[in-house]
Amino acid sequence: MMKPPEIKVNLKDSNFYIFTNFFYRSTVIGAASQCALATSQLVACARVVAPTIESPACREQLEAACREVAKAVTVLVEVCNDASDNLHLKGDLMAAAKEVSRSLTDLLDHIKLCSGERVVRISDESPVEHVLVATDILVSSSDPQEMIRQAKALGQATAELIKSIKGEAERHEDSEIQRRLLAAAKQLADATAKMVEAARLCASSPHESSHQDALRHAAEELRDITTTTANTPAMKRRLIQRLEQCAKQAAHSATQCISAAQSATTYSEDIETKEILIQDCQAVAEQIPRLVSGVKNTLANPDDTSAQLGLIEASEKFLEPGTQVASSARNLQPSVRDHASGQHLSKCSISLTHSIHELRSAAQRARDACGGNELESALEAVKNLRSVLSDTKRAADEGTLRPLPGETEDGCFKQLGSTSNGVDVAMVQLLSAVTQGNNTYAGVAGRDTALALGEFTKSVRGVAATSRNPAVIDCADDVIVESIRLIEEAQRTLQNIGNQDNLYSSAKRLKLQLAKTQDCLPGLKDINEAYETITELRQILDVGEYPPASRPYNYFKTI
Image (cartoon, rainbow, N blue to C red; front, side, top):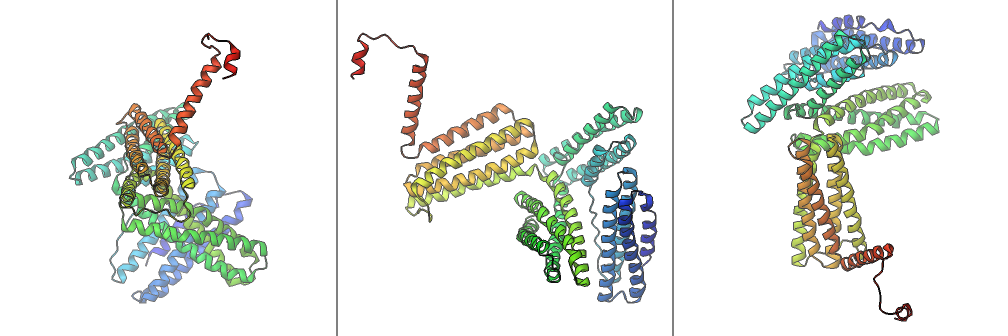
């Protein structure tokens, strides 16, 4: 119970008085006052409930007071970050805030111990997190001293990461996984050595722009290796677990904000702002089920790449409507006549803003770590399409394949041509991304290719059902097989295992199979052959060189 005074001391050491901008001063003072008020309330609550801490009600009150302090500190940090560009002061402020968070965690652990519960401490910051944060600060900094300071922190973080990777390699029995992890650790060590050398040169000539650029480049290279090669499955799981926590909190905060908005709108006469808030609430309410479903999928299948990417995408799509709701709620709050409803709406909007900030950060970290899984997920989705075609083929052979409602022969023919072009476009994007070595865009292009092939498979079923032509199913299966080979070759190329010649050969075979599938349409092959013949004859006529004739021109005109 000695932690609240410690929190108070840490807040006093945070140097909140350094901002001189008059515009921000009142905001900073207000946030600091709110933070001090929340801290004093925590101290008072601790003194009152200390003798009866075993009571669940007392523990709940103390935990609620801790949460209020954490929210107040978060708001204060955000306000101060907006008010100053001094990275050194921001670093001191963040260190003080982390000390407050650590003290709050110790207090909550003490509460659990007093109630007989087992305390399980899980650190939110993994070595990967330390590397990413230090790199972001270093790359965005223009102060040489700050860059050197962050380079030291980055070196320590990578040392922890290398140690963690080697420890995980020792725990694995699979020799292939051990080899891959140790190779990643070596690659990370080499990149760290390069970064340290760049930091040494920058320290010797801190104002030399070329040395600063070299240090930034080395740090970015180190970050890329961390998020791709050196990111182990265990570390990815930790980032996904962090994202799960943030997603659940964001869904809860959004629900609370929607409820508060519904209550507050009855006390406001600002019709335009109310309508905007209601629309924003409807938009975010549509995203909440998807976000909750994404969390459930990753909890049920923690190592499933499709589930992980589904949660990341659901979190990213939640950010914009969630931000709009928080902004609309803040705009409505001044016009709410009922004080209690207005204050509740304000608190809910602040809580939602904080939750969205945490969700955005966690989603970005998870995206950086799991971005290489997108091609693997796309590959699994494409492989599943073979079983779909197999079921379609079986139904066609048994005579049970029927058109779906609204499907016509002409419409399905057009859809097959359109979806074939979609697959071709997605394939070109994948080739471009892989050729440039861009893992992020390659993952997106792989996902688009899988989606395009899914639509292609649906159109093939329609053609087979309406035209009674089962040959199109076999050709479509060849398209899927070549697509699988193309994605596998793209993965090898990105890992510097394959080569671009094999990649382009796979793409040509896929394009050929797409053309064969369209040739299965009735009459299309004859039309294509006639078009090619006309094109060849036109080229001959354009040359203007005609063979000599033994008969006069008037004779040919009468034919």
